[in-house]
Image: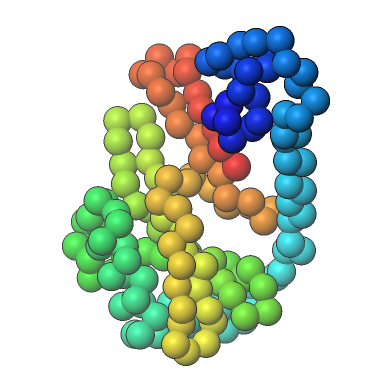
Length: 150
């Protein structure tokens, strides 16, 4: 790491500190700025996409591969939710796993037209709202240790 950052033999080196100036040390990259995309309203036909056999089979195949939750009725009718992301993409989600104090949903970004390209985004989320997918985890049974990500 010292070599990568140009810190070898400088006073800020981690391994081999010496008295050379830190003037040649690489500056950190700026923090990337992420702007949330505008939130789109669902279209009347969006829910019907979940009835399409090709799309359903594609998402169910990924579900079976990446999730360990088995619905009561097996994999016959996994309950998926859908919401509009953009002009040509939707977000599909469903319960993916459960544990003693937690559960996680899987989220896929899917093209709304054939060939229904799908991308699994995460299997560790709990909620999606206002253009963000989030996860909260209860680390202990007493409720005093929580971890969250957005």
